[in-house]
Length: 481
Image (tube, rainbow, N blue to C red; front, side, top):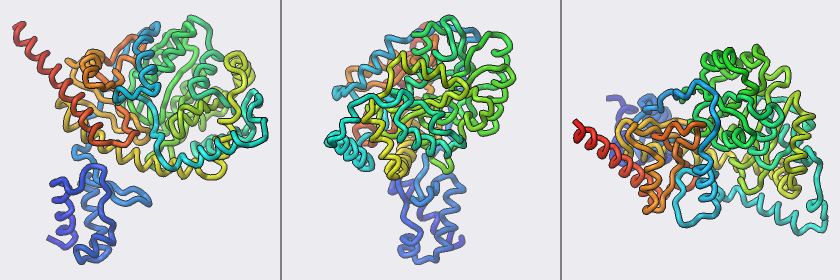
């Protein structure tokens, strides 16, 4: 055994015995050299051995971290939704989830889509807001421009270059959260009774916008790694009068996929061929675990048919209600839809976010939050692998803070939530993310909050109750035979 193999063996043994747990940062190269009396090149080669074995990963400017032990993971299966346009249901379940997130301290909300708001990197934003409130300048209490404050639109245009988009500040409309951007886009493009193609499963907020506007959803099969099936979408475009395609192609909510760049380009070309618009939700795009962050579909847009929706709810805080829309060729009508929905968005949050970004605090906050989310993704995956029924499929997002889990067919996650009530735990059942209530054996988990022993116990409880449902189903089958 060579010296670097000996060092790798020592570190491997420590990992296997739990001295370094999933998500933990390993000693630096220099620390290993000092402890084991080896050269820098030997320590580096030992770490390369561990990376080749998928035991650890290297994160730029952060160090080496322990990976989940079962890599590659069992992924969720490719979705198989209905092949016809459907009316939207599930509002009662969505209302229950939304209501539960409003400062509910009585339940542990494992399925909510909220970022971690406790990081110190957000403190400059609080100071900026306080300063604006204390200022004698009362402009912050007045209406701003209908399309948003010039300061914020300038910063949004600058940030958009990271995703490959060259936007002018006048190309952007500031909205009351990304939800309004999506709603404006759909109202701009459609009339009641129209059909909208969506990836499946899909964000329940978008589904409820479809419901509110009398639209039908045509759910397209979706792969947990590469995203919406372009082949199935092409067939659907040939068969149905689709008015718009709505997708979340980067760090998808809920299933976690990111479409490869070539497929994003192909999606745009498909929309061109059939002369249909694309509504792109990029709300999680800035939470990339790798650099550079993925390009948007909008970055390939040469004729203005992509309406790009995003905001700061998932990166900074949802309570600010600061989103934005780049509507392309539909700018005039989208601005009218903005006026008739909410008029100008609140001024003070816009000014605060603009200053937060302009002074570099936003990028600093992102760097810190991303490091935490990546580490916590690995920890949450390890818990799901440890406590959930054998064979559960788990997504592996390369950004954001949401995990999609596909349990055995015997587990109904709506019923699972009912069993979790007495434990004061709530998950987001998969049926929320479908027009017809499919994916009842799936659930969404959030790993943004600090993963404490109490949260591990809660995840374990979810897994134990799910396993109990599997055993009950098997027993029922035995009794019937």
